[in-house]
Image (tube, rainbow, N blue to C red; front, top):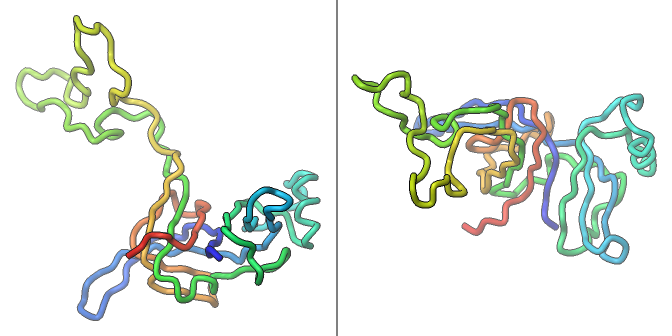
Length: 212
């Protein structure tokens, strides 16, 4: 079974290795997650575990959400996602609660989240352009992208030219983050490196399939 949980980003900190090296750490709140439904190939055409995280007030949930969670005697959830499985998960049942303990013995995880939204940004911030010279002769054009295409032939801007526009608020997956520590008492997972999104944002944490 491919292990996975839902959670949220708590924030970043650092720990020190025995040789004094500072290691950047992201603290993730993983679970507890309720198994709302088990997808089967016979009924749904594929195998998957549908998990729910973070209880929602019943008055804020739709009738369909309340009815779906009532089948497994659970409260409506704010964050619901599925984890595909290649084969049926024999040891998992609907209504079961999964905790961060599922990551014990796992070396690396993939973390998926929504990056911070930056709104409409210029070419320098969005694409890392260098900008024009900040010297004599450049008048209020320092952060402009410069020329964006040919003139006479083909007399238009080609597709794919990097220009200012909407930046961020995109689904991003950071792969193969090293698991540093599993805190079962507080449902915390410590991974090495950064994960997408702001503090408090929902995340999908799954066992990595990267070899090596």
